[in-house]
Image 1: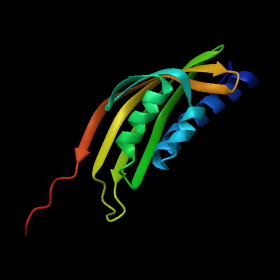
Image 2: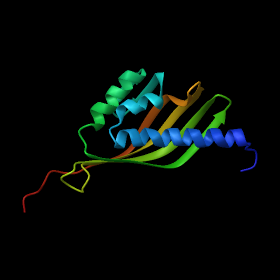
Image 3: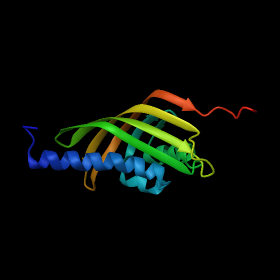
Length: 145
């Protein structure tokens, strides 16, 4: 890890925490807290569509997640690159969506996140969020035995 100074390491840690906070907000239905993760003019492209602006993207996140009691967004292979007051985040996500009545997920999605981040007066925020779907598994309907 040569070439990293303390500032770069601190930025990378803050950006990684920001990214993980995105998943926590979705998992815990804390949609209002997404205001502390996204810039006001964020552009987001997800399996739910493309939205411009924080309020529109939060509304989309709420619509696509609120009906699930059980949610987990697990991130791996997180790669952060910082260039001054901007940066990029690339990571794989596995999202599981289910209901309280069953430990089996209704849906499992895997995808590649490619986010742009910017340093603001309030800290790092996501300014562009792109999710490239890779795999989708839907629980089939029950089969009579």
